Amino acid sequence: MPIIEPTYKPLFFFKKGFVSTVYSGLVRRVSLKQERERLRLDDGDFLDLDWSFSKEKSNKLIILLHGLEGNAQRPYVTGAAKLFNENNIDAVCVNFRGCSGEDNLLYRSYHSGSTEDLEAIINHAILNKKYSDIYLKGISLGGNIILKYLGEGGLVPQEIKSAIAISAPCYLSGSAKELHTFKNILFHDRFKRHLVNRLKIKQKNYTNDLSVEDINSIKTLYDFDNIYTSKAHGFKNAEDYYEQCSSLQFLSKIKTPTLIINALNDSFLSPECYPVKEAKNNPNLYLEMPKFGGHVGFIDKKNVYYNEKRALYFIKSFN
Image 1 (spheres, helix red, strand yellow):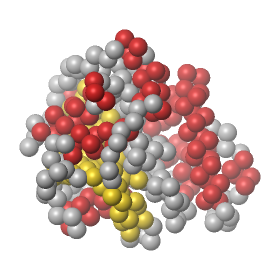
Image 2 (cartoon, rainbow, N blue to C red):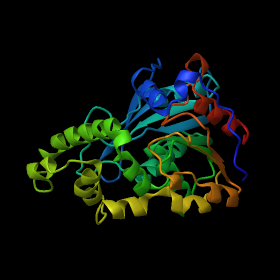
Image 3 (spheres, rainbow, N blue to C red):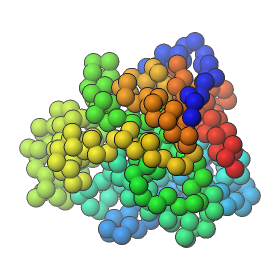
Image 4 (cartoon, rainbow, N blue to C red):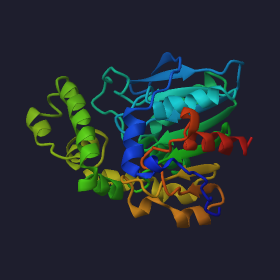
């Protein structure tokens, strides 16, 4: 499809990517009532799902996936859920394994390509919850998971009507390199600190798989992916993980109407994360590249973000 012309025009102060990213992550607040459900997985682990509902009974559902070290209470997730609830669409905000406030049961956890968990949630929504119209929206890492799921060749249920990926690192190796640059040092160190702290908790139950020395040797996010993410999830090393899980290679095969919104001033994304060629060659893939927005920082009026409004408009256009 042709590249979509963005209409996003933030206030002057929020035109700076760093400012919009930090404000959205640390300052924004959204009030939303949620009900938690624990979904048992076939491998013996679990996912905690946080549901919110429209005022009227609905057969429509949006599944919302958070980013690296996020959870189902992050404003970039609950903000979308609240807007969709107000438009007669139920929402389930997913906590990836280990992200709900309680460590998951297995040595593995979640990663940028763990589409099997998304598939389990979709099947649960269709078979047990009886939703007939389902939409997917993923933020950052969650966006990459959705794009990979839609294009990797599995059977996508007919109930999946459309999807949206926001600030999606379509090319993981490139995005990882960007996160290791000086401009992103504050974000890098914050992610690493959270990941390592969670890994210290997990290590106490899996001393044969991971040593204290291994954890102490983690100085960068790349080290974390090399020592834990790749090994715990069946990849050779960090680069093998990045190569196999990058959604860029799957975009040409997406058959579900899908919108990607990646801001041009997103410091987390490499040039490959703007898949212009893939969008032009796939009639189901729509790409919008606003000049501003940072990483998940599309601040707009009345605490409803531009990307949330665009997501709602996009799914309505395919109803």
